[in-house]
Length: 290
Image (cartoon, rainbow, N blue to C red; front, side, top):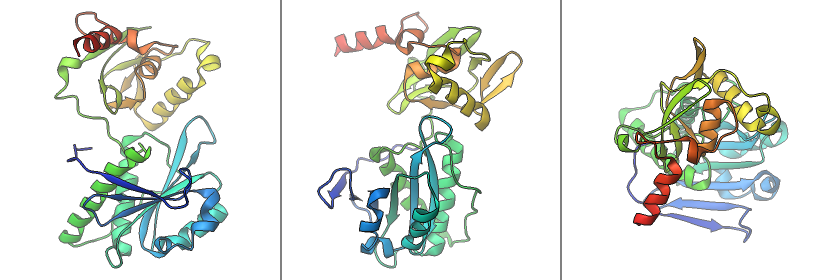
């Protein structure tokens, strides 16, 4: 996502429990996020925020592997939709929804936000979606579209701070060429960058098509992630290798190099610059210079 100007968040822990109901407000913004664990839903659903129009996210563990999955929806108001999901959707364990002041959002507005968030999550491919279809954006006036794009921009800026990274696009590498690193092994050749968002493997990099036999036993998360990337089209078979079709952000250099080479890996020594210095050596030099 585009770099945002500095902003502050005010988090109000409504019941005194840091894992309980939290209200999150952003400086100079009309919106508000409501965050809560599913176990508290019967207790908190009578709050006034649940009677407002909004867009919501449900998150919970995947049934087919490590990590979380996500459902995106909208409600006018939010509560009837969450009542339904509380009774019928099994996977979710926590939720967050965004509302604004009275009269600020209507049904078409939150349908626009829902469609934009689903589209963004599908493009980022960071987390599986539980949604059965991809909603279309409703017809809004030019002014309303502009207002909702600002609302969306603020949501996307808040979510990573709240620990939700499903919508983050891999940062552009155009301005970071001096930090370009390379990884080679088992026939694979990849390039990448260490960024604040994570380790980005660049589009056009190649990964090994097969895995060492011990990988699935000792590092099943790597095997599952490679499978996910193949299913989502981030990796495609090209001749005897797998090619990255887009820049993709991993949560660590080691996970990135393990996926590239199909084996256990130490990212800080596997990734090297054009002079042969490892990422570990680069970081040690930066620490000494500092």
